[in-house]
Length: 71
Image 1 (tube, rainbow, N blue to C red):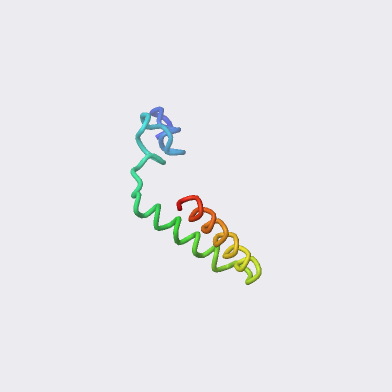
Image 2 (tube, rainbow, N blue to C red):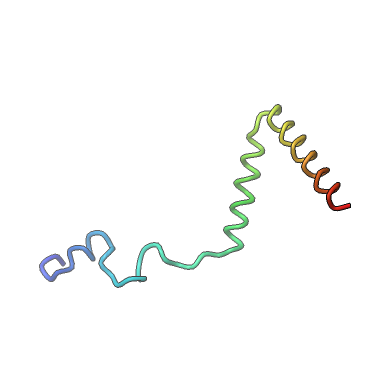
């Protein structure tokens, strides 16, 4: 109702008090972690075979270096 001073509140949804309305809710940590893992798996699955082989070699070398430092 613009004539009663509610033009911004009705038009954009940004007229409420601070912390009320759009963008502030709670986020489920498990859902965020699951989405991260899913996006990572999708990205790795989309790699060409050459890049996938290179990634495996790099991860294996880094794993061996970590094991060497641990023992």
